[in-house]
Image (cartoon, rainbow, N blue to C red):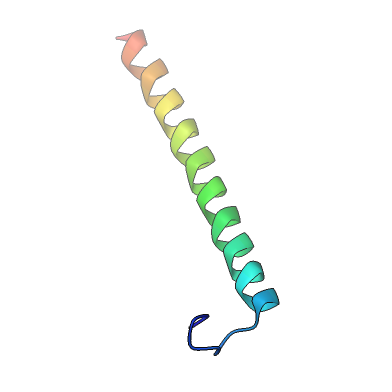
Length: 44
């Protein structure tokens, strides 16, 4: 869309920031789940 000039540069950057926030949150959630599962496995 950016190449076809359907998005402005500002809009493109905003969407990139939004995607990065979602990615960061997903990584944190995965790390928490992994840590929890690791603790669970070590208890056994």
